Image (cartoon, rainbow, N blue to C red):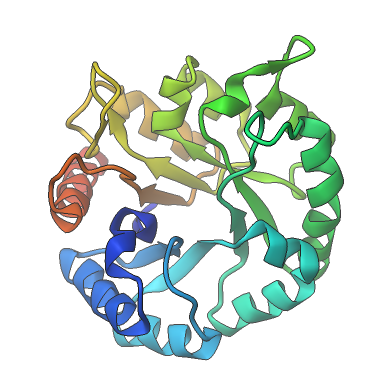
Length: 248
């Protein structure tokens, strides 16, 4: 498993192409070789390919706006071909906030998933805590997984949001085996603050062992809230801690 940086962590430093270019260099200087492009400014796919190549980076996953995916998923796939990324992500779905249900998700993104698959890509949905709420007695995330074949819907498992949602990260990584090429790695403190990996209370020995056995390829460090600390420093601490845990 490689260790990548989820650029949503440093989104405040990715608001223009110039900022994004500088951020990619900083991330590479930490030692990262893979990234997820999320929360950044708009970019031309060819420009992004060049920036990645210049910094010795690969983009292994993105987050794409729901509207863009629904309007033309085939075009999204073609853009991803340019910078050689086969995992196309959706970062959020407004369960409860906009009275959207699991059936709305299935209706809206079933065609997206099929189109991406037909174009050589995989659709990856990133959960938060609310996917562990129940609809008619069943967890929303389980409903989604039951509605899609494994190759149609991958899940970007998030260690923090699993714990915050009241479930065991280790148990749910096992449940999602075969669907989790990417895991978002961030730790959680006793008062639910987001922490660099290894500085909170999660059982990383168990999480990493299970992730590897379940087919995870990319460990993507993400810290949405760095609690006033420098997000690049948080990325560095997580990177160093994960490398030590993996014996790298």
